[in-house]
Image 1 (cartoon, rainbow, N blue to C red):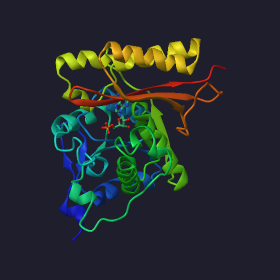
Image 2 (image 1 turned 30 degrees about the vertical axis):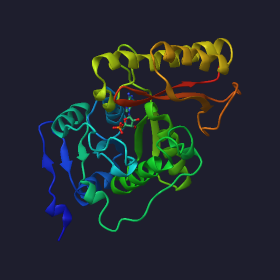
Image 3 (image 1 turned 135 degrees about the vertical axis):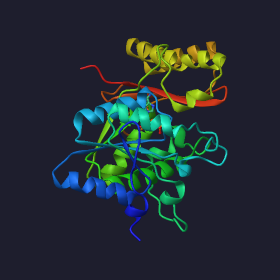
Length: 299
Ligand code: AMP
């Protein structure tokens, strides 16, 4: 049976077309592609906020067809993580995605993405073993889940450009490396972190914060700003100390707070003419939050 017909695209209020199966999506894209259309892909786990919408708007401005994927990917969650309670609101997501310019939303079920007997994974070595990928933290298995699902999305959609957020800097570095190493014919665009008025990086996981923790959570971005300012004026070490002081004043003990080469994710002790990433992860109340600042060398 033709799966495309078994899963016809559904129209939604936002004017976006929803697909549950890759076959239908592919045939909807094939006409546009024959005519030379540029296809943009924005992968998301849904519960959309302005960070996601900024990626969709960029894709809309640069591409002829915009596809958003909406999939809470089970293989990137560890056994003790928040897969079960991850916030979801598909109806709202479809409306917001349509308003921000998505043409198609691809929202497959876990069984569609990982059919029985699924046993093939994509792994990027090295970059995935530090920061969030440290075995004592989320582990490299988290990124194996990410690269596997993103590789599948690249194969299902065939985008010319794929959009990711700097908020997840390590993920972006890992995906860039995967696309380069495995010759995916896609340009990877990484766009700036969108923040709340008090600096907190937008995240679907901010929904876990109670009002007191929500206020405390702004210390992460304050710490990164202090790190950047102090590091530029003095040394990276002094920058990290300033960040630690901000976190500690808010009663936050970071899981990690590190300065790393922005591309290789190798540790750096001093500025060396290459972009430096200062990255932080911390549990604040019920949420594990990450944030970072990218410090470009002065020219
Ligand atoms: P998620 O739904 O959390 O998997 O995120 C989907 C995409 O949106 C990823 O490329 C994220 O890096 C990006 N993203 C998430 N939060 C933000 C943000 N605050 N600003 C910019 N991009 C973001």
